[in-house]
Image (cartoon, rainbow, N blue to C red; front, side, top):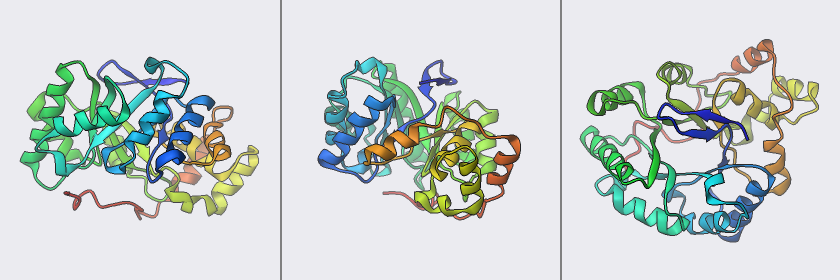
Length: 270
């Protein structure tokens, strides 16, 4: 799978496999199937409460550890002891290093947020995290990180889909070399019912989901769709053999409603 170059010199696959809201053998099998089909980026988080099962899938996926990019996240309730959360994630995932470890939400306490980010950097110095990043961070919060630590994070995960594009934040990140990872890229399937999306998909003999995921790639975002259905896992990956025209990208852009489906980053704290 093709990769994007990150601002820290590391690389990340252009598409990932999300692990949210699936547990036990279901997510273990899904991770194994995803890797078998060609996914090379697994997106995990301690808050998902399934990292042991995700780790089983990674351990038995049949390819070398170096071929799989594994990202996990620390939840704000652990920002006073990021290393404790990191060590548990490593144990649960059965790994000796993470390709990326990020702050899951900004939280509402700036001083605590900055201490947590500093802990990420200290763990990175030990060689067990290759890339540090954040999720749901706003431009002003990213500017403070740059002021305090001299560099922007390499990654920022944002809720992004046709209904909620966060264009100003995405453009801010693009201009500063911060790679955007788009979570909830299909808006929990809500955007797939749109006539515009369905018409564009039909033109290419693709599903609505494939058209939206391709839209993300055209915009330089890394989508991380999640599914436990083998057919859907394959379908989500099968988006590399076509491209959208500028007009089609603009038509999907026009579906913006400003309505998020996830949590409000200004209120999540624990």
